[in-house]
Image 1 (cartoon, one colour):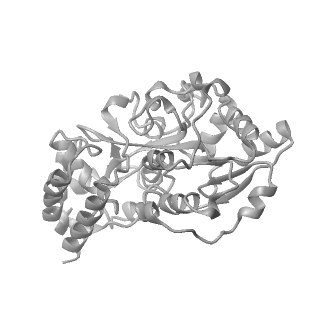
Image 2 (image 1 turned 30 degrees about the horizontal axis):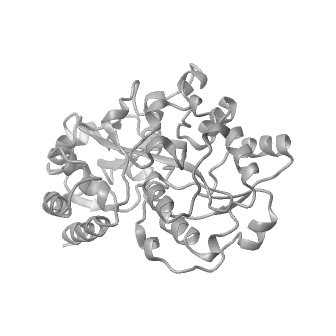
Length: 359
């Protein structure tokens, strides 16, 4: 999810080689004793939907939490990860979890995929949704102050042009994740950030190294810093953008051409889940239309329900921002997938970009 977690959850793959970690907050013992244990981001379920499941099933889910995807990966990839039934990874980590046998193939006969927006299914990170089912989703967009920037922004090229302008330079924010920083230049070159070679990533990174002198921060964006003018141009998700625009209505948020990021947080069933039947019952409940509506209202990011927008009511404000626009072409957005062969290059070049910004 990206209600402020977009930047931390994409933290990187130190977990790919991680060794066993100590049991945290809600440990293995609690996981084994519970009738259903979910490993997830903090505060990521509407309390009413959890209570509704408890009333329906008689089971109160136990939620253990993590603060980043690599922490989640490291935990599941260690003895400390046993005993969980469901986890909620972002899309980039699903292939690695599956490859290492840490999650189970889904039994599609037990889940109603027909209620899910088709554009969110069969994505590059999990063809056929063999292992995952979408929980919610969001986009990487550009948030800017038209008055300060002095131009309309519609593309990544516009972003780079605007960022170099006097009065804008030094008030730009970009992501702390290499793929989100370098991805825009790859897209402008007509390349796919998932299939780009190390050499192509390196080459694209050179433009960002040159642009780095205009970047003030790679840290998590605070909505208030856009509202007070600390930043006038930033890459961010629609959640942060909505909060900033509520503070300063003149700000704009757009999904830039030619391509931008679609992130999807997903339900997966953990390998050897001790309460597999209850896990399927929980996922079935979470797919109910009324539960998805409640989740969207609580979290602020859209659940995957097909036709969700119409169910949220005519008085919904900022609907275009919540859903990324009046109509989304899911073929124009791309979901990042961790590739062990190139992830190190993204990380290293990001370090070089940030060093250039600091210098």
